[in-house]
Length: 109
Image (cartoon, rainbow, N blue to C red; front, side, top):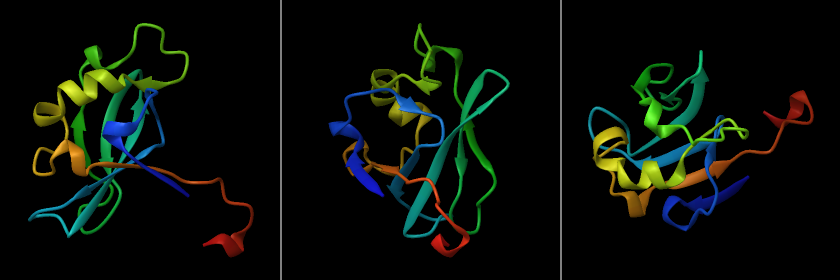
């Protein structure tokens, strides 16, 4: 598993990437959001805690890079719009990107 601060990231954020934030009520101490793609629209899906499985926000079309060959959201757009479209209870400098390795067997659980 690889972990990097969002503010240090250099490339767009591909679907499947996890954003880990310091949480506040009604979330736990930390909350994880996964970037998902659903019918040409991107969203942040809560994947931790009591609210796991709920869509946090559907992102606007402007969040998609012009040449979306990597199936991603635009990094600079997210940084510029974090307080409006991201989890604003967590300052952007406390957001981490989590890359998980693909599982190799059932024993990786």
